[in-house]
Length: 360
Image (cartoon, rainbow, N blue to C red; front, top):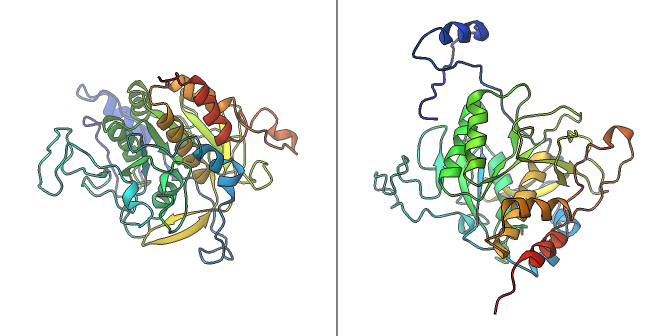
């Protein structure tokens, strides 16, 4: 990513033609348009604010309490939230944040030599600074992070499926599509076991974007990404990239949510309708979208790996995808396009427990 230059224009241009001209120069390896990236959340119901809805139906639906009886997670397992910032000051997130053991805070030195100065809790790859907090108006990443691993049993706010796993905050900008993929590379280099990407775009991915995803996969990361919220069978990216886990959203009736995309490449579904989670400035909010379903899957994978750290990625995927509950299909258009089904955390943890060697 250090060799990739991002060019912005002050007025509309024929980008395709400019790319052709740039590629004629010997010093340019390739030139390509940047895919537009958008978050994959849907709406906030006006009548379902934080003060009017305290239940977390999704955790009960996936049998999270039963799963947490097997394991409550481990701080050693890291899930990177590559998104529009994570408010790590939030009382339900502060204790869940990863702390870079090789970095000394605020000394202006790249102590661990990873190319990023003072990246103690993650990094802002969009603004190139050490604080992964959201900027004004950015709420999406904080909501996503809470669904991965908001602190549980702390007497406030919400619980999460990830319980005690760690969050690496990586702020990107959806106005700069390549920054999201640069964030994926940072997360992989920071040692993330799982990378949550609750965003995507349509069209053919570029070389830079594909290289970033392949890099993280080659580093041993599991990449979990949302399939999109246009209610059709279109394929978004990186959800369509080989090797990633793409996630659709279900509603309270265990049916595909009306907004969720669906397609033959979909891996699995999770609750994504009216999901309450953390919000910037110590708030909580309910949002619907495949953006919400995706971090529930990421948090579950973190919980599974916490119980058996030596489990392989292939084994994790198998336990995740073979222990699902069926999605109720009322319409023919969904047949064969809802993935393995809706996740069941308890069954998935039982699968991991069966694989874990007995100890003396």
